[in-house]
Image 1: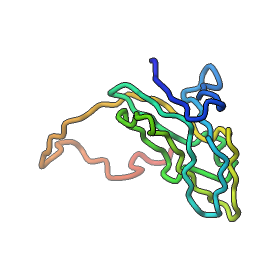
Image 2 (image 1 turned 180 degrees about the vertical axis):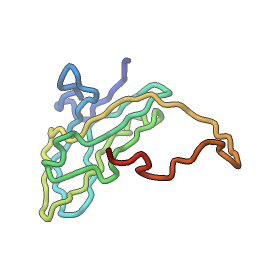
Image 3 (image 1 turned 90 degrees about the horizontal axis):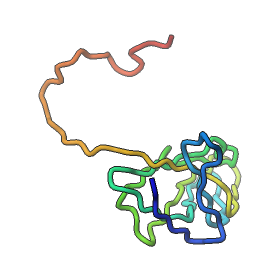
Length: 143
């Protein structure tokens, strides 16, 4: 799949897959940013993407993001295929979960992105599902 990409700051590298088996590519903080304790900051990721219809961007923490004292405030982010304009730069909504200010340096790999397929569905409302109930969360047990 070929994706059109625009970098805001061309002195930072393009996103890249760091290993042959990597499912997601890493993205970089465009600016140095201090995040106060227990606060949220929006870290610009230096890229605008033009992805095909029927796909979306899933933005998630890297496995090491927590070591920086931050995590994604909303767990994951979703980027729609129509978020593709010249000023539609992706941002990472970072929560500083520590009791002290955290500084994220420009060029730090703070998140990862996957481009995934999706389907648009049509809903058919029914009064009865017609299937056996499973009895809620954790219904299959622990072991």
